[in-house]
Amino acid sequence: MQVSDNSVNKAASIKNLTGFDVNQPPDAKLIDSCVHCGFCLSTCPSYRVIGKEMDSPRGRIYLMDAINEGEIALNTATVQHFDSCLGCLACVSTCPSGVQYDKLISATRHQVERNYSRSLPDKLIRGLIFSLFPNPDLLRLFLFPLLIYQILGLPKLVRSTGLLKKVSPRLAAMESILPQITVKSFQDNLLDVIPAQGKRRYRVGVILGCVQRLFFSPVNEATVRVLTANGCEVVIPKSQGCCAALPEHQGQTQQARALARQMIDSFAHTNVDFVIINAAGCGHTLKEYGHILADDPDYQEKAQAFVAKVKDAQEFLATVGITAKLSPLTDEPLNLVYQDACHLLHGQKISVQPRQLLRQIPNIKLREPIDGALCCGSAGVYNLLQPEVAEELGEQKVNNLLNTGAELIASANPGCTLQITKHLQLQSKKIPVMHPMELLDYSIRGVKFNGELG
Image 1 (cartoon, rainbow, N blue to C red):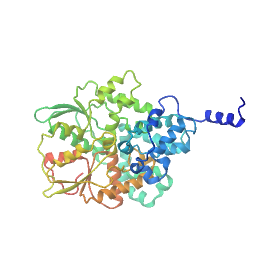
Image 2 (image 1 turned 30 degrees about the vertical axis):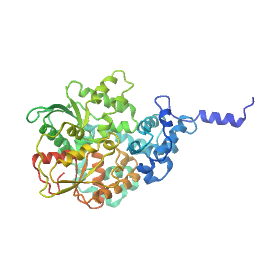
Image 3 (image 1 turned 120 degrees about the horizontal axis):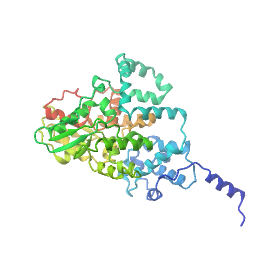
C-alpha cells in the first residue's frame, strides 16, 4: 500500500504540534460529556461580551478536544480563548448534562503554563502579580509608597491624563482598583487565640487571606467579633500564608501546591473544629486542596482532613445558628442588595445562607438584582489581565445593583468589592459596599448605619 506525500506531511505536521503533555491533560471522558447544547452560552460572561463561539465554554471544550487529539496546537491563537475564561463557573451551574467544566479549564490552565511560552510583557505582569499578591509580607512593603502616592493626590492626576492606560492597560487596571491605604493596612491587630464570649460552643481557626488582611482588615476583625460573640474560640496561626487561590486559578502548579501545604501545616496542631474563611475565592480553593494535592503521598490524607473542616463564615453561622442578639442598623427599613460572588454561588453552592443571615438583622429589606449570577469581572486577577472584558462586566454589574434601589451593597469577596467600588465611583455613586460579616458585627454591637459605614 502506497502512502501519499501529502498524508505523510500531514501526519508529521500533527506529530510536531505543540500540545498538552501527559501530566493530567483535560480528561477526554469529561470532554465527551459535553453534548454541545449551548445552554452555557447565555450564562457565560466572556461570550456575552466577546460574542465568539471559541470564547464560550462549549467552544473551549472543542479546542481542548482538538488539542488532545493533536489536530491543533497549543499556541497564541488557542491560548487567548482559554485566557478569556473568567473561571466563574456559571456554566457548571447551568449545564443540563453536568459537564465538569471547572475541572477541564483548571487542567487546561496548568497545561498552558507548562507548555506555552508567553510574550515578555505577559510574563512580566504575571510575574509581578504572582510574586506580590500571594505574599502579604512582600506586598506590605509596597504599601508605604502607595500611601504616599495617595496622599499626594496622584491617583486623580494619573487617571485624568489616561497616560498609564496608553502605556499599559494592565497596569492602569491595577492602579484603578487600588483601595484606600490606611494605618490598619500596616498592622496585625488580631491575637493568636481570642476567647469566646460566654460559653464556648466551638473552637475555630480563621484564615486571614492576602488582599483581605492588608486592604480589608476591618472585615477580618468583624468576622472574629461575630464568631466570638456567638460562642466560638478563635485561633489564628501566624504561620499561615496565602490560600493558593490566585496561582491555582492561573495554572501555577508548584506555587499552588507549596502554599496549600503551608496552609495545612499551619493548622495541623491547632485542634480546631472548623477552619473559617470569609473570602469567596479563597474558600473555593481551600475546599479543592484534596484535588490540588491528590498526587502528593505525604499530603493526600492531610488535605482531605483539612477540607472536611473548611467552612465559609456565612455557611458556618447559618448552620450552627446565631445566638447573639441582633439590633437594627436603622430605625427605618434599610434596602440592601446582596452580591453573589461567583466562587460562593457557583463554586461552593452557597447562596441561601448569606440571605438567611442578613434577613435576621431587624429592618433589613433584601433586594434581588437582575442577572445576579453574572460575574462582576473581577474573577481573581482577571480584571488585571483582561481589563477590557472586565470593564464591561463591571459596568453591567453595578447598573444591575443600582437598579434595585438599594442603599447598601453586601459583598463577600474582596475582589468583587474592589471591582464594584471602582465602577460605583466611575458613576459618581456613593453607596457603601460592605461584607455581610461587617453588617452582622454592627448589628451585634448596636452600631447605626448612617450611609457611610464601611
